[in-house]
Image (cartoon, rainbow, N blue to C red; front, side):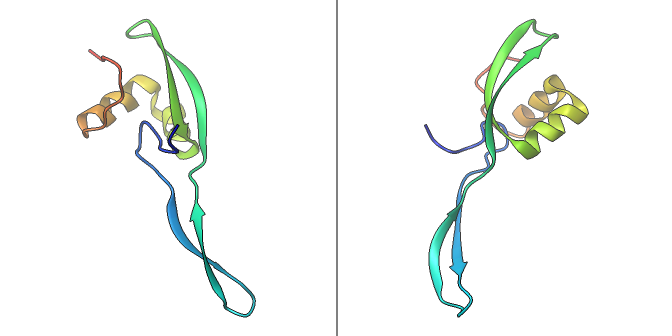
Length: 83
């Protein structure tokens, strides 16, 4: 399974490990992803998402339904039908 947030689209990026002697080697920065199950009372359904920690904070602030509607409007494919 890919390491991409289903809601925000965050994915791994690449960069350098830099040693004390300034020697550089390539590395990957992985997003902080978690599998989380949310209940949406407006549609009376459960949805399981692979979501980043920063997106979880936003969901806690504005609510899962509003957040998913906003992301769908922005063009993200969530995989569920919202009214």
